[in-house]
Length: 320
Image 1 (tube, rainbow, N blue to C red):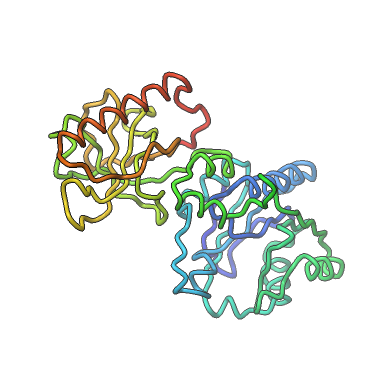
Image 2 (tube, rainbow, N blue to C red):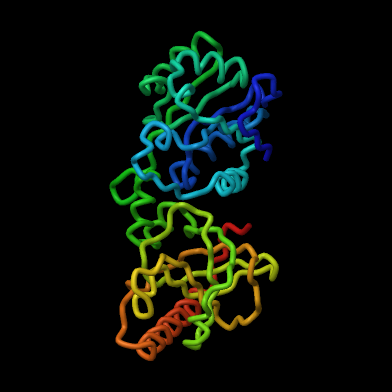
């Protein structure tokens, strides 16, 4: 996949393709259906499948105090797009000036002059341009004049409700990682780098990888059954992960992400890893002593072993 970030006006962009427009945070099942349909249509027409998206997320610019935390980094989003067969990802810088662009001007100057689409596909509820006036109806009207067709896709429904990035974020924030898995059609993951911690886990008998996360959004504090990809080893390992503040040992400690990798003792400090969240075990708790904490961790590890004995490691993880 060709990645074109904030291309200059003179840049040579893929023209004549099937273009999909959206923010696509997390690339959930609804996004996958929309983009997958565009890719199939592009293959039928023998033209490029192009995704047009934005960075930063428009809400971060238009409502900077909203506290929005994204499911995926731009790099993760690009990887997920590539897996769907997208030929080119065009990522435009979203600024206050860009946000004030009239919808008609966006269609003429960005879509038509720069991409010359044969067909445009977007979610039926997607809005663009100044005051969010651009929608499927406007595109259909302008497409009839400027020579491209338009397809608006209704949301994908799960459990009687539309799948949306907001819904996935809520599931992750609640720690409902199995619900997030259903909405994403994949295990939610974060990327990060291993750093040297205080070796508290090792003193308890359960050494951990202390992970500095790259992602903005983390699951709720608690203990999870996870899988961790360590690229230098070329494989994925079963693990148990705690997200929290170590209340048994410290007062007002900063939030940490610590993964105990089952049957693994190698030194991987400073290495990048990818952590997949498979199931939630319990809330983070304060114990009366380190001995009680170690006993609970032992139970958590036993529960994780039972999980992996029953289900194994997922085969469809999105690897780095």
